[in-house]
Image 1 (cartoon, rainbow, N blue to C red):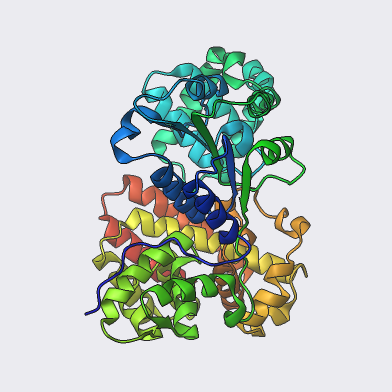
Image 2 (image 1 turned 45 degrees about the horizontal axis):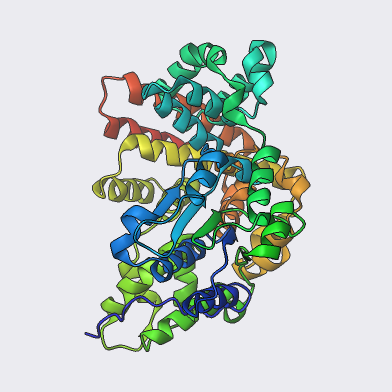
Length: 474
């Protein structure tokens, strides 16, 4: 078997990696800027570049004293700049990294459920003020609105519970019902300094001839507009790289991710067929980090063979939740009880808990109901279901209007049109197997099963199996 070469960072996408490689080369040549801004939606590439910058800027033996990474969203800019102004220890430079600060991440669609969970966990740790600040953000309330409590607070709380009902545990609900209101009295305005003040302090730092002994790197998993004042300021005194989201192409040969994967495989003296790449995209949700993790496994798996084939992906790459739930919901939509039960048993044998399976089915039934309503209301044309996947991507998915997307729930987790194009495509095709009333009945049956899973004397496996049989027989 051929061995895997050492990890290389020579990805050659001209729009993104060219700038990244240029920065690394300049650092190696001693041309080091005091401030860097790495921003954009390709988190894997940002982390990859950040890792190599650290490797190039700081020897391992001095990192304990001279590498500071701030990843808490609520980190104070004052704290970061205080460290940035500290002289390095036994090293010619200090590296300070600020990752995804809240005052800059507000420009993207934040995962409000994740922020809520941070609030709950922080409360358990005894930090009530920080818990209150996080809870205010998860409810989309300004500090003043949160501190006032009252009607607006209650409305935001009810909306949050409704939008996330399929994902909230009983402990989460108890926290929202019993604890959230009390946190309004713990809120301190000092915890939420305005983004304007924080950005202003960073701009002032970049313009004040910062120490040549410190490199400040701001890494942000959201794209800032080129007119953003921080982008402008850092562009004048440092370096800015925008890792824009790689968009899928209707034609695989022109797909930017395919080109990057193909270039990466050349380092292994390997190739990948187009249908294999399409299967890999489907199974990974086009997630770059997961794609590269799987590529390393596949290179070992195929041994001396030169090309990765679709069968290799099918044999080696673990199915994602989408693949599993699509298998199960397809069987339900076909009214095929043997196939539905076979898929369910396969999932259970892989160790998935019935509660998780219930959650996945609920999510997919919600998406099916959204798809059915979009089609029947004329928001999407019926001929979509007859399109090939590639045609759907080019003619429909890439042209979805923000107004149409906003008709569905704001939460990405609950909005069909905010998903990867492949599950959208499959769900629209599946919607034809149901009537609206059947999907409403399915939601009612899912609610009943949820109660049974949490309180019934029946085993969870029996509850979920009975549920699947009932959904097939709607």
